Image (tube, rainbow, N blue to C red):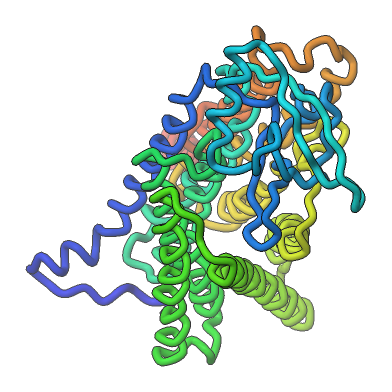
Length: 458
């Protein structure tokens, strides 16, 4: 399926087949905007200074790994990322937590959190504070930038060759990864009965957890050279998992969206399905890595250039290791912090679009490549550099940590590096000023030669 997609002529079906992916790319951006709005509309609501996720089987909640370590729930109250939150003011910690925090905030008091730490129950007091725009930036900026990197890569790959099947598959995968990142944190309180929250929850279930894992396998099978396993009946069996996954997810969510408790067996079934989807997608990525290793080996045996394979391997390996850690902790009911020494390690996911952008810039015909790939490359490099740079500055000036009246240091540093890097890349491209001076030597030399010969009368 490395050739062009077979379109019918002069029909609505032909138009739909040709442009539906372009429409989905635009829809992806709208979904991302809706996800940010859904969290932004909750600015001002009281919360305990940490984010949390629910564990379906264990009946407990865990501190979200992307909670910044300087937030009050971690820094002041002493919560750990490995803690299991059981109760809030003596009530089960659940979907009604927003009302409890609102009551505590109006009474100007802290809340008592009962948790399980190292196998023993403990209680701590945590202050209730309003969720501010700065909190939004600190918790969402990483996912916004990562999602934007994959979305821009989808746009670039698709518009370069919109009729190529592999380009279309790859664009879809990038869009679904972008949706997952943009909707990773989509509400302040889990399972809040709000129409937009329910709609976004449904989108994540149907597009990412139900459809994305089979799509990743499909894309890996068709990566050139196409695998012998890429046959219609195998693909049909693969995509038959999507409605099965969705049926299980929706069965439980229909109860939760109505404010009802779901039975334990359904919770366990959904958790098992969730882990199966995770393992399927992760296995496909690992198989892709092994295929790249095999291709690099054959290139080496044939004494052909293989630098591009090494770059792609690095770009996939580090995010894959991070994904393995996420899946492992999810299955085992444990947790870890995304922050180490104030460096946000989630940005390592940008290694994938960064590596792909580098290979395209270096090895494809640059004049025919879409210049948006420069944006993807500059975005990835700037985010990684700004994450390390802002961590160093915050360790040097710790007074900036936890302030809700100052924009996070990462944002201006990232903006400066991104604009500088993008400008430098564009100026050095064949379409830029420096590129115009340096990359047209052969053509200009021929013009000069013709001009010189005319002057000499030859």
